[in-house]
Length: 51
Image (cartoon, rainbow, N blue to C red; front, side, top):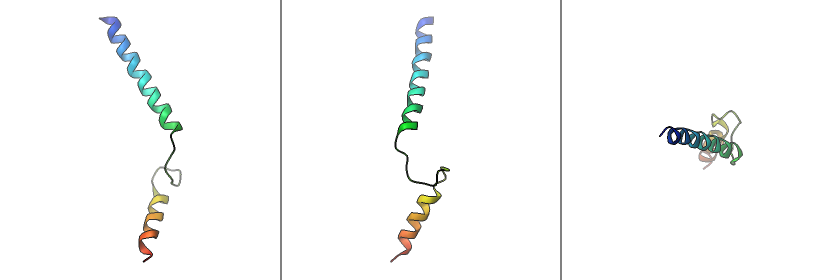
């Protein structure tokens, strides 16, 4: 029983690390680099005001 608990904790840790690695290598969305989305908001608002 103890081995099963240790294996589940180990598998969860590997899953977490794998997810973090995937997110770091995944393509990021356009933005200013701070993660606030200010550059994306500026593009959207500039595109909607030009009519």
